[in-house]
Structures are given as structure tokens and as C-alpha cells.
Length: 385
Image 1 (cartoon, rainbow, N blue to C red):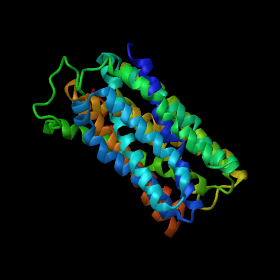
Image 2 (cartoon, rainbow, N blue to C red; image 1 turned 45 degrees about the vertical axis):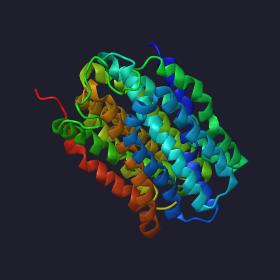
Image 3 (tube, rainbow, N blue to C red; image 1 turned 135 degrees about the vertical axis):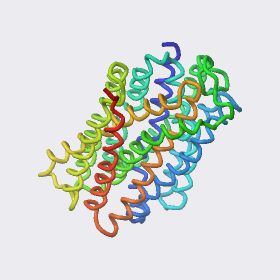
Image 4 (cartoon, rainbow, N blue to C red; image 1 turned 180 degrees about the vertical axis):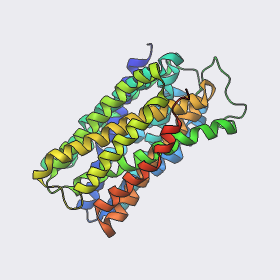
């Protein structure tokens, strides 16, 4: 489809500026003297700024257009990433995280809405799957290996790689050529009468996918942030995050096309159960530091979490776009992305705080319990016979 290749490159480079630092920035401030609670604040601040920005992104695009908005996101992600190397003190790192969060907020809302607007509604699942594959490549390649690179070669290579976002600026303007000018809705369908306002029934329909997304991203964010501190040796965190990100990427890619055929509602509950089983296994394993002798169950548990994490991301996004309709793609994208990053932020902050008092086993057990609570919502989403 026209514009999809440019979208893929913008997604890949933009998320490179996010993925590599997600587990490494908390580790960086720990090396600088911060405790687990301080480490959790790094991603919490990043994602708090992200969420605040996401709700303002549709208005930003209406004001300055797709190309300028996407290019600004690349600059705000790439430049502060490199500046992390100046200091490991918690305060300055939190400021840089907030700036990166603004860039990431613009990127996530704009790029997911663009993926939907570039295709016809009957190909929406496949488009979301293709977009998910593009953003998953840096998540698979950079997120797990960043910890290993930082341990083996130092933190500077990770900071430099995180600056790859700047290479996506030309693609931002290529994507903009194929999108409605200064609009985040399908021109064939009218937007809501008041920009940013959705009908009450639509808002109600967005609650279910948002709640499910919040729970699974809270769990996934906690595992991504604290995996290096849950293990006895660094390479266990690397391969655990690799298992999680690989299964997440493959699941997000393939489940979209399946949802186009059978409907997204039929697929939600199996992925909730998969995530709960994986999180319960992680909680059991991390009651103490995971040892090399536990490598097989650790990998299996992380892989199960990744499958649930990836499947539910894609399916809840599709449910959000279905609920909002083509006239409110931008609003649905903002709500979905805000739910994703709110969950990740809460997971980073709360599990870190619980770990200080009670250990990571209790913290991850709580995330499994929260996911169990969303199972009735998943079952209710099944189509009625």
C-alpha cells in the first residue's frame, strides 16, 4: 500500500530511540546510586510525559501537519537519548526521560493512526500487524541486547543507538504525502462535531479494551524494567527479554490478519489466560534472583508473557478502532496509546515500590492477579451466537 514502506521505516527508527533505553536507563541510574524505587521512576516519568502528550497529539497534527509532527517526535526521542551519557544522576535523567516521553507520545499516536488511515477497513488488522512487526524489530533486537551491551561494552553504545530516531525524519514527510492533510480521521467519514469529543456510547465501548490493555502493559512494563534486577547474572535478563519480545513480535504480527477473518472478540480470552500463566510462573521464579539452573522455566515464562503481551496489544487496538469508527481514528489512537503507556508507567513505579518492601515475587504476583480480573471482560467480548 502507498506509504506503508515509509511508515515502516519511521516506525522502526522511532521505536529504536525508545526500545534500547527502556531497560537500560533504569539500570543507568542504579549505577549512579539510585535504588529500585528511583529506577522505577525513570520509566514512570518517561511514560507520564508520553500519556500527557498523546491526548494533545491530534490537535498538534491539525495545527502543524503530519510531517512536522512526526519529524519533531524523532528529534525529541533521539537527541535526549544521546545526552543520557552526560550524567547518571537521577534528577537530570528524569528530565531527559520527560523530553523523550513527549517525543514518544507524538510518535505513538500519529504512527498507529497513520497505519489505519493508509488502508481500507477490511485490511485494518493486517495493517496493524505490519505496523506492529515494524515496531517489534527494535523491541526484539535492541531491548534485550541493550542490557548485555551495557554490561559488556559500557552504556555509551546504547545511548548512540538510541539516537537512530533521527534517521527516520525523511520518512516522516514521505508518510505525510499519503495522509489526510492536518486530519486524523478518514475523509470519507465525518469527524465528531467537536474535535476530541466522542459520543458517550463510544467512550463506554473504549473502556473494555483500555482496561485489558492497562492490565497487560502494567505487567509487561514491570518485567521489562526490572528483568536485569530479577536475575543473578546479566545474560539471563538478556535472553529472558529476548524470549518475551520475540514471541510478542510474532504474535502481534500474525494475530491481526486472523482477526480480520474471525473477529477480534473471539481471540481476547485465550491471550489473557496465556499472560496470566506466564506472569504467575515469573512471580514464582523471581522470589529470589533467577539462577542459571532455572534458565529453561525462565525462558518459557517470559515467552508466555510475551505472547499474551503481544496478542492483547494488537487485539485491544483493533477493538478501540472498531469502537470509535473511521471518523475518530485520532481519538481512538490517543486513548489506546495512553492506556498502553499508563499501564507501563504504573508497572514501573508500583512494582519497584513493592519490590523494595516485599520482593519482586510479590510484585509480579500482583500483576498476574490484575490480569485475571480482566478475563470476564475478554469473555464478554465474544460475539453472541
